[in-house]
Length: 223
Image (cartoon, rainbow, N blue to C red; front, side, top):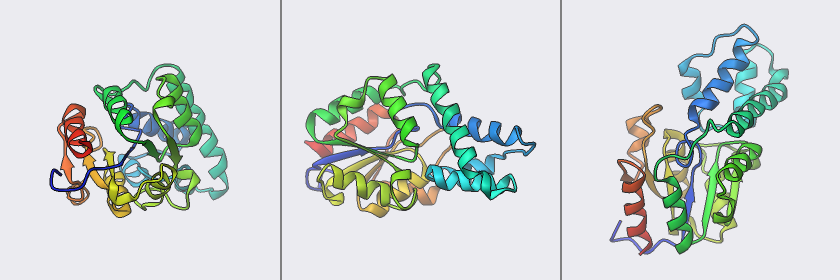
């Protein structure tokens, strides 16, 4: 990274990078299916990770055998997520607050998340982080969710930064793919609970051992 030009913007993922919340999404999908007598599998979680809320809601509704349930499923799962965040079940990951603060002090900071807008706002409000972000984008606000690059391209536009001049911090396979496809430098903090596959991790410019390691790599790119 030291051989590349100084970055002028940073874009973060949220679930698994800022807060410990990936398991809450899985819990919401499982509960939604269980309520209707359908079993949610771990392979289903791997399929929908990174999808926008309209995309995963359509997947869940199809699994339930009724595509017309998509809006109901989406609302139900997002409600469960917001309730869990309000209950304190989505704590900040160790080192995330320091990474956010130090990055936002140096360059414009954006958020590019697969989470629904209501969930993004609930997380940032709960942890008093809203003021650190110059822009936040939900993949439900663009045409396609991760691994497509749309949400990263939109976030870069909103902070007026060329993708090639920005750094992304991601934890999931589809997130890494999305940031790479958008042309950003990618720092990966692999999620230990839902580890990215090797072919996705190969797209990362830096694979960090944790948030402090990621912060060191990021500051080197910003200095």
